Length: 99
Image (cartoon, rainbow, N blue to C red; front, top):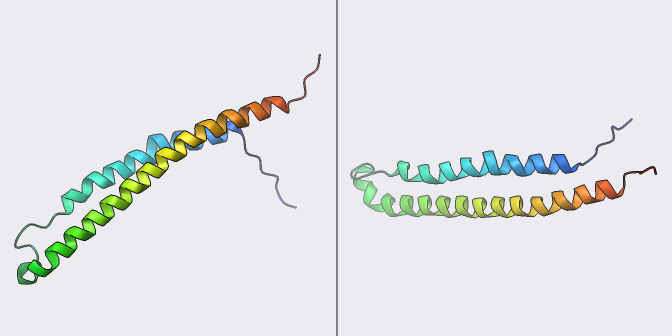
């Protein structure tokens, strides 16, 4: 027999909080730490002249992808705020009230 699963407004609020308090700051810290992976001359040696530009391009690509991820997560946090309010209103509207 399958267990019934329910979504609640508090669950949605917890997801929103976790994204804002944990996920986004970790991605921001990761994005900042990408600069720490710079390899200065002559780190790659003679072949470094060829690899240096490609390595820098790869770092830039990772920074951009991480920035895009942060932007998406911030959008989710904003959307989840609206979703949570609507879900809470639906929960309250579906509660049986006795007079």
